[in-house]
Image (cartoon, rainbow, N blue to C red; front, side, top):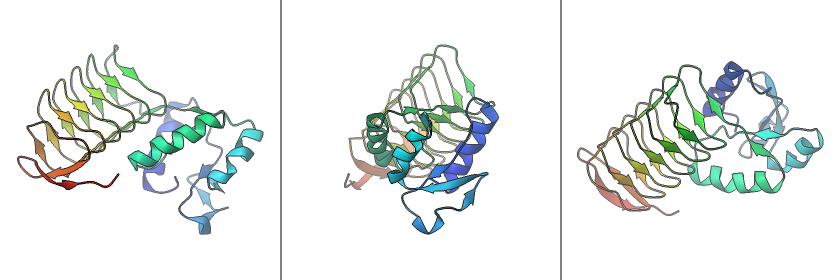
Length: 207
């Protein structure tokens, strides 16, 4: 990716000081290929993966929010022989026993408390809080300012929208979408959109 979220991820990568950013790939905007973005060149789309491999690049990280697309592309990345980098902002507060999967991005001011398990390709965005013993499955996106109480499960490729609150022991179903500012007090089925206070199912989502 080479837009807003990519700016955030690039900033975290540079602050970590573990990886060097050598370029960006973006399938969505071919008119920008060759452009300088955030201190590096947009090399092209995913067709440039073989070129990257030949140049000795070992790690890739996703700089866009689409949950399903991140999971799908991660399969391609692994098939091509790359590894996924993990980006954790130095101001994030993460308990010592938290497990974090490859490709995950944890942004500035985020808190992940004891006993939580964070899958691969997860985004825990700016100032989100994940309390004790939560499970965030692969590809999920916890948007800025979200608050998850203890023992919440967020299913694979689900997205909890900006400023939402989820009470303890609730499960957000795989592929689900919680609207901005919602208060979730009951389990949410797979693949549905919910919003409101309290959150209610609005419709199914075509995955």
